[in-house]
Length: 451
Image (cartoon, rainbow, N blue to C red):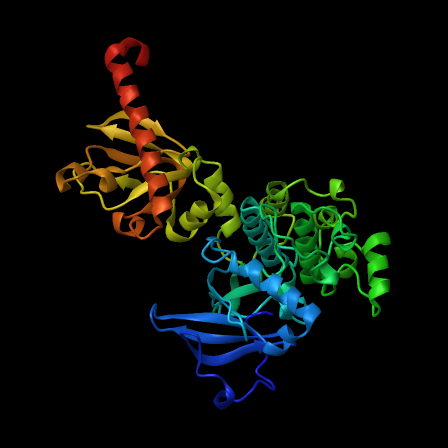
């Protein structure tokens, strides 16, 4: 059950419960045959949340009730466990005997379902960016020992900025397969139109089942129809096992052969023919942007996927995980400087530090060039590390020698990142300082060799 639905035919506010547990009910977001989702207020944390409550009637059926208990338990086991910018957080789970409920992060933007309609298709550039973010999120989920098993447009929530999709969050972990759990799990679950062949025949699953499902979602977003479609369930199953989907380029103009290749490989019937893991699939999606295999222009500036991959290639961020890298992507200030621009002047008090992503700078002391720094190097870090203002005063001029892209932070901005991310910055700076101390020692011990 997604967090949002059309307001048509939703119950009047007066008919809603005032509270679900300690959560104050604001309005109904959506409802289905077995559950309903409310927008609620957590007054203790001053936070809006989405509360998914199972209908009491769904628990009364002896057989179906056991299934719902398993689905509830699957999500309840993930409370506070999934911490990723593209995964909906699960805050609480209450096993109320009459109507158990799950408390989740509220995402105000709906789902991807409307964007699968032929009259609401988004640009290929945006669809590939969505696919990349989903792949990174599901890669994180898989590293937690989980396979989602129900990746579909209704389970991918969208965040909007000025009415346009700015980011996504993967949601609804009721069907998740926990590879590390000893508890008996429900099999053959998911949404048929997006299910891999091995999910249908009950085979052992790995991450390639979710890779197939995400590819089916992307296919639907690109073409306006799922890879396979039939009125009868048996006919649809037959197509999934025995037919090849049409190439996306046959159903939409300006789709390149490389887009066809990436999507259809991920949709291969034999999982050994698909991408072997999430890294390989996400890199293939990213390459579509990098290699200009999708038209550019509707999304302005540098895409998050490009920034993420740029960071991952830099030595400074080599020990950062995906979650921390995404935090840097969104928290840092990204700058472009032309040749000759002065990053710092001798005697100025530092206010920011920079990590060079592309290009190079030269360092001058009293007019003499003493160093040249390129991609992955940091400059100005004493503004963060120094214990006193005097030590934050620059002792050299730093001038751009090749057009430069940098990632910059102020100490105040860095203080806003999570503890794990900040710890990794500290670790990276320690490695920088150790290398510089070693270079200084070598210069003193072997001046001729260094010069």
